[in-house]
Length: 116
Length: 112
Image (tube, rainbow over all chains, first blue to last red):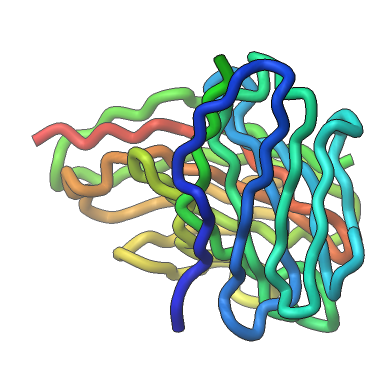
């Protein structure tokens, strides 16, 4: 099976702009989670989507949003970019777990966003 | 709330020696525990997980981890380290219906 793919791999934006990142999960996986990784804060959970519905949400401002399509592909959007949004954004997909609980997350290579 | 601690920012070990990367967790109820590895400019790769059953879990690339409920620990181990094991290692905890929480990561350097 193909792994999780993320596009684009690299992005450079300026403050105030908005950006959309895309994630295609492993075939058959219906859960997609997004994370922000920075040297100072580590891996921080943004949100999780399952069957087109946001199931969990982390502590990020409303400028960060996401959605999931019927084919399980997901996008995340960041509006009004700030310098502090520079990070590696990782997407992970999961198969249905034991009794619907959490199962292994499989990560994509990430999108490196630089905000100037 | 769930939390994960990885008390060592950096672990150095000589090639061929055993390695241990430490992880302790805090979660109410039964934990689901995971180890991931990240190589430079790459996403995280799954190594192993503990859901239930045997406390010693074996995973990819010769790694294993031991779940210790009384000490709330889930240390990652390998009997003989390779230079290619040098990477950033993350421990994570989750439980039913909750999102993953990752530790801060431990950088492992295996010296030739």
